[in-house]
Length: 112
Image (tube, rainbow, N blue to C red; front, side, top):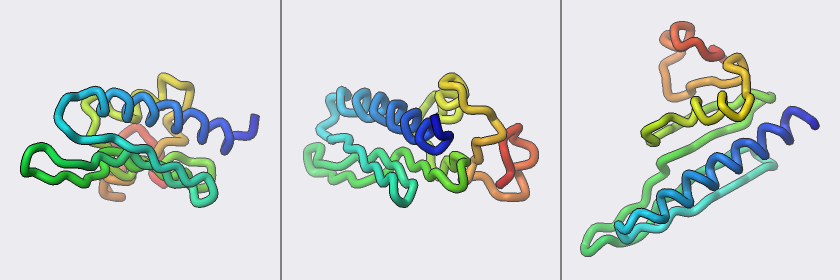
């Protein structure tokens, strides 16, 4: 299977599990998935009202750029990188985009 298609499938599976879990939390918020294969962007969106508090946030944002998985934002407890590694993605194909470029060489993941 093409690496891009393989990574799209892995990302979607992981984000679907995360959104399903987040939606099961009885906090009044809904979790939605936004997948854009053409542009390589994948998001989990939390939205809704809990009593008088409105929430619109993106707890997970991943981009697939040049056959590398860029974790742009990760608000999960376990960490998306661990899920990607468990799914068979090598660390050299994972970039922690939320880390400053000067710090990335010390993360044991790809730099760019």
